[in-house]
Image (cartoon, rainbow, N blue to C red):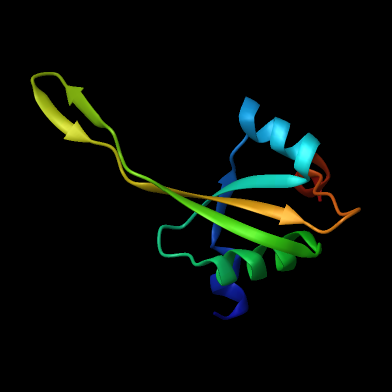
Length: 100
């Protein structure tokens, strides 16, 4: 992937109680990523965007849920999450990146 495509791999940080605990205890950050992204793509994108060393990437596919819209049933989109482990001493500061 070229630089422009890597910039679109990460959709948003996925901040929940579980991801906050992983951040504190295991130096692991969670991102929502494109559905066609691979582990290598996510690793390169995080290194490019945040200038950190990535130790490992785990990817989770989450199937969409069935929802009712009035009398009709529908389905939300499938999503993909990436758990990114950083090297010792590396951190990502979301607030500082948003202000820059």
